[in-house]
Image (cartoon, rainbow, N blue to C red; front, top):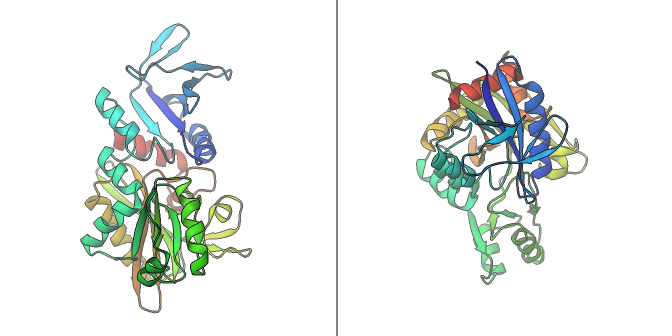
Length: 328
């Protein structure tokens, strides 16, 4: 009998449109011979099942069920592809745990921890697996000590929402005068703004999944901004202003160093499903810096982890089978 999959997309953040694009790609790639797939859109307008004819039907939040052709449909597993809140920060995970419904992502605690960079970075630093840049978090309502931040973090720092993704409201600050406006921009998106030390180096990402009794650590991808973009910002990510080189053109020694760090962090942070670790590699000092972990990485046609999987002969359809198998 086919498994019933609730493919959950959307969300309440600026990443909603990216999540919808990821969801459409996942829907197109899932094996319809094995799964009955139901698109569920969660957004500020409500929780709705999108029927084949495009009509929206309300989801019963008591047990996360929907009605199709007059019959109640209950799901075997949730394929969660919401980037940002409430799908990546532990909120939905806690709800699914309470009603006993399996899902494809990290659990509540890991999702909440890793979503907030200000909380996650000290935890990763404590493991001693790789370096972590200096950073401080400024909360809404707190006085901004511009001079102190410059002295402690240095110039040019990055300023970003402490909780968020897709480089939304992220600024590379070059002067002390630019710091306070950058913090205010980040605070418009989140209650915390992280001021993080700039680390010179190459941005390299690594996807990891444990499924069918085996951990799969994928080939590396290097992200190279172009067209005047100094870093992998929102426009570079989604409008083609970056080259993504898979596998990354680094030595075998560096490849193993990064893959080993990703594999260890996957277990130490109690990750589940498919995640992507982002690093900065400083060649001059042969030093690896943790940047962040994406517990729900993008799944559009050109997203990084599906490319990494294809590089080792795993089709996108097979990759999604592995994700579902891991959840079940």
